[in-house]
Amino acid sequence: MIAKSEPTTVVALFNLKPEYELADYRSLSLSVIRPGMKKMPSVIEFRDFAVDPNTMANQLSDWQICEVIQITSVAEFRRDNAVFPGVEIVDAWNKVVESSTVMFMSDLSLNISAHPGQ
Picture 1: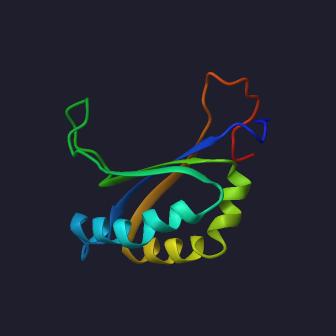
Picture 2: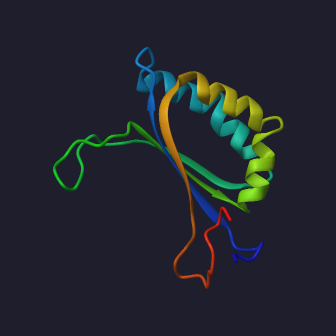
């Protein structure tokens, strides 16, 4: 099991609803998401990126945007998403996001015996 002191990384890949553009998400990120993430005790670092549509395999990516979030623990991050400002971020995010996958990642250089979400 991951020790409490070992941070976890969250990777969220998502697409916007057809009525929203990347500029809309950027505005939302700068006004709500980034400032809110900075206030969440479980968030160590937050970064979001526009995904280049071209992949290394010369295929088109299935995703438009990627968020990479360094967190203290999955349990603490889930807790923070259920209260202000996390709930405000979740509500705003769900209004613009059509499809997504959110993954919890463990650093393979650490001595781990279970996935971070367990």
